[in-house]
Amino acid sequence: MRPCLTVLLPVYNERATVVPLLERVCAVPVEKQVILVDDCSTDGTREVLESEVAGKFPDVEILYHDKNQGKGAAIRTAIPHARGLYCIVQDGDLEYDPQDYLAILEAFKQDGVQIVYGSRFLKGYPNMRLPNRIVNILLAWMVRFFFGSPMTDEATCYKAFQTELLQSVPLQCQRFEFCPEVTAKVLRRGHRIVEVPIRYEARSLAEGKKIRWTDGVMAIWTLVKFRFVKF
Ligand SMILES: Nc1nc2c(ncn2[C@@H]2O[C@H](COP(=O)(O)OP(=O)(O)OP(=O)(O)O)[C@@H](O)[C@H]2O)c(=O)[nH]1
Ligand SMILES: [Mg+2]
Image (tube, rainbow, N blue to C red; front, side, top):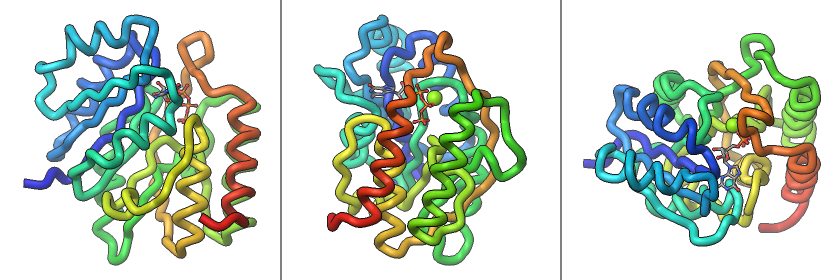
């Protein structure tokens, strides 16, 4: 039978969090498939996957990149393998709470809803570094301004799609441009994005956060580019 949800899980150097994260993901009471893509980690994540994950988590399929390519490339590797009715992106850290999948899946029950984003900012602002907060506010504003779509959190990791819809979007992203690229492309096609509130606990750079200010600039440029170019 088709699982309800496919979790697309890009992982790069997340040795400390990948197992606790998988335990949290697998504890969510929903039929699911998890596609974990290890992007040629160099910190021992691969060894952890081989010894503590492979064969021990029945819902988890592991794919390996033999060269580091970036979060967007890892998501693109996973997408064609998705069998669930819906797909959601899940980071390999513990910043988001997989129990929020339930609220996101609930939102798909409304008529005509095909895309649901979990918003960290619908119910106030969680603890987050000021530069990250400013870039997040700017990206959401840009989506409203350029695409006329109400949005509070464009850069959220929790983006969920009807699987066939996501599989039909031609993506080119390598790194963190997945978020602005997919958002711009579905809005250009006239799809609606529904947001629901989710929890968020930011980690610091010292704790392994990999996104940099240059990725914020890239995200802004990607939104502008896909507002205007043909694809
Ligand atoms: N596959 C792959 N994943 C990566 C790479 N760099 C980061 N990631 C993963 O992308 C996820 C997000 O990275 P973070 O550093 O936490 O950044 P973030 O600010 O939470 O990123 P977003 O949620 O995408 O806005 C984590 O699961 C990382 O393991 C990479 O080079 N390749
Ligand atoms: Mg993260």
